[in-house]
Structure formats: C-alpha cells, structure tokens
Length: 310
Image 1 (cartoon, rainbow, N blue to C red):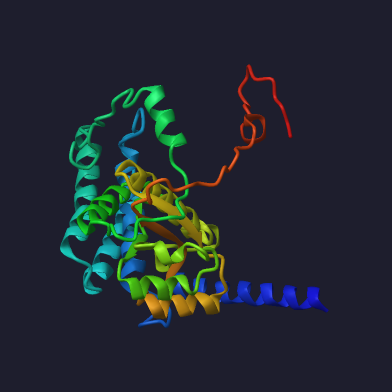
Image 2: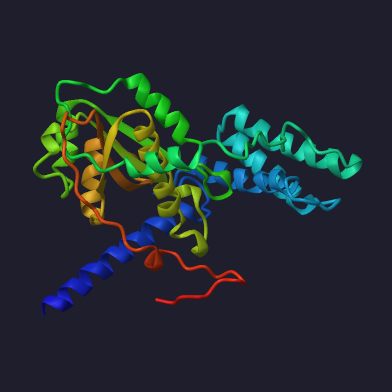
C-alpha cells in the first residue's frame, strides 16, 4: 500500500509539472493563465535572430543564408512591439536582420552582430586553476558578524549573467535575500540547512522563466540552464572570497508554491535551487567529500583510446 501511495504521489507531481509547462509555453490567444506573454515572445524572438548571429560565426558561412527566418522575425517583431517589449531588445533583432541582408548582398560580416573574439589561448596556468577548483568546498559555518556587501553581490550576479544558455535566451533569474527574517522564513521550507541555517547571512534563490521555452524537446531545458547559472554563481562567489553552499530544492509543487509566496516570486518562474552565501567563519570545517576515481567519471571515446566501459 505504501508503494502505491508513493507512485500516486509521483504521478501527481508529474501531472502538475505537465500542466504548468503547457500553460506557460503553448501559444494562446488573449492573456492565458500561467503564461508570461512578454517573456514568451521575447524568447522566441531571441531564438530566431540568434540563429542569424551564429550563422556568421561558422568557419565558412554559406551565402546566402538565413533568408527563411526573416519573415518569422518580422512577425515576432510586430507582436513583441505590441506586447510592450522594450526598444533595445527589438533593435537587436532588427540589427541582426540588417547584418544578414548586408552579408548576403556583399559578403561582409558585421563586426557589431558577429564580432571577432577576444580569445586568449591560456588565461591561467595549470597550478592556479587546480588551486582554485580544489580549494572550493561547501561552507556550513558563516561569520554572523560580517554581512555581505550588496555591491559585491551585484557584481557577482552581473558576471554570472555571462553563463551560456540555450539559444542565448538567458532565462535564468537571481533572487537575493539578506534580511534575517526573510532568510529564515525561506530556510524553514528547505530541508538541508538544519544545524547551520541560523548562521547564513545571505541567500540566493535561482529561478528559470518557464515561458522562455517551447515544445516537448525543451521540457527539461530550464533545469539545465538554471543549473549552469547556479554553478557559475558559486564559482564566482569563490573567486570573490565568499563561501557558498548549495541547498537543493527537491520539493513538491505545493512546497514550491509556498516558497514563491514567501519570496514574492512569480508563478511562472521555476525554482532551480537555493544557495547560502557569506563570509566563512574562521577555522570552519568542511566535509571530506572524496571524489570518484577518474575511471568512473571519464571515458575517452577517441580513435586512439583504449575504451574502458563501466
């Protein structure tokens, strides 16, 4: 009987996920319940014009290219303009179309729309990289007398916004809380902070805008993009001298609705994870957290590799 109940509970969550995703990502007339229409249109416009941008970054861009996308972009521009999307975002799409038409007629690639990379072959030496990645651990003991500077948090958030995302939609969003009452109210809904939550001075809640995605193939993409953003955020906090700890949000839809209410988060944003942040307490301890052996995490499939299958 217990197993039946557990299976029904899982099925109920899947149905809830399905309904939320369909409402937020399917084209509707009027103002549908559960969809952020501006985000919906903006993400599709970005998806369309980004295809023109990246086409010119290929080794040998064909000519002409991208012409079939132009009518779609112009239709989306009309809809986006009527939906109140700001002029800067519309101008990005217009400039991509103009650059495409210029390339197709002259063969010249736009340095504005597809600029040459500022790539440096080696940014840091091996020792510095290893020192950085091996020195980061989850912190579960923070200095309660040392609040985190909000300007530093803003700097980190701006740098984390460089995280790659599917078709450049950048649909992640970062909510930051440093009021003690709000932090504790959020932590009361999360299961993994018992024993140290009272020392946490700052808390991130990473979300993804559900209406940025479309179709069956993208049903899980927001979790991937949100996870990438969260990992960038943690590494950047480490680079700036702050300690962090992932506080997973493996919760039911009901508990997530409670969190949205406490945090003031829109119902069309999916909660990816919570992250504690602050200055580590002097002499704090960390979990040993041994790594798996390389043979268990890396398999070389190259021509010269001796394949080792688990």
